[in-house]
Amino acid sequence: MNKKLFILISGFLPFIAGSAQIADSSRREVKLQGAVNFRDLGGYTTGDGPHVRWDRIYRSADISKLTDPDLDTLKGRYIASVVDLRGVEESKKAPDRLNTGTDYILCPAGSDSSLNDWMKTIASLLSGGDSMMKVYYSNTLFLADRYRPFFQKLLDLPQDQALLFHCTAGKDRTGIGAALLLYVLGVPYETIENDYAATDYYWRTANAKMVNMMVQNMHVNEQVARDMGAARREYIRTTFDMIRKQNGSVDKFLKGPVGRDDAKIRLLKAKFLE
Image 1 (cartoon, rainbow, N blue to C red):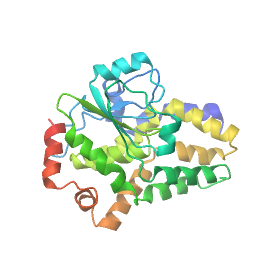
Image 2: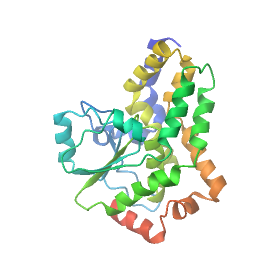
Image 3: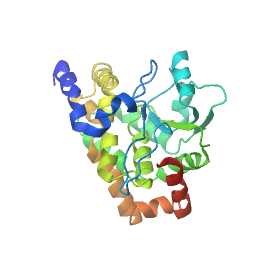
């Protein structure tokens, strides 16, 4: 596909990704100089009526390049806890830039092995990027270990503070984490998918650059590169389908391997719904 045409199509993604997630982007998106795909997870209405509190939970891509004004923005939003979903090697190569005193935790379960396997095969890919992403999203082996401490940090978060969780693109590991959290809070599944797919809008410029780099520098087939960079609903759907297949239901997975029993779920809802 012509590069200009790809960028043009990307510009229409907000209308595809889910109207609510884009219509409120002036409030949801946090525009920073050194990070992209940084947005508030609040505002979503649950099936019971309450909505997720604004200004308490944020999701983002890499934050290793935050500027001083960016750090001031985080401080002004009371972001005092950061959950890093990247692998050990990823975090070493691009350590988070944080305000002094920030409560930081790395949740690398499965990320280093996945990253190593990814990088070993990426240069030789000629086709099947969409299939590869579905294989990635169907691998639930590390999900419980990766997100259990994430949920615990949310439970421990003081009422006057906010939490940020992120990976590198803010799409895959962050997208799965956001989906599981919204599910726990009772947000309808369609909204969960829309929040995931909205990354195609919030990360569109950085994604176009990544696709171009993979095609030009790594000689990856353009369709494969676009498949890898996309946040397609079928990707996150694959994760939920596999969780149900292996555990009987998403609820059993969250209450079992992830350890979110009824009491903890009630506490999460009390803290993050209004």
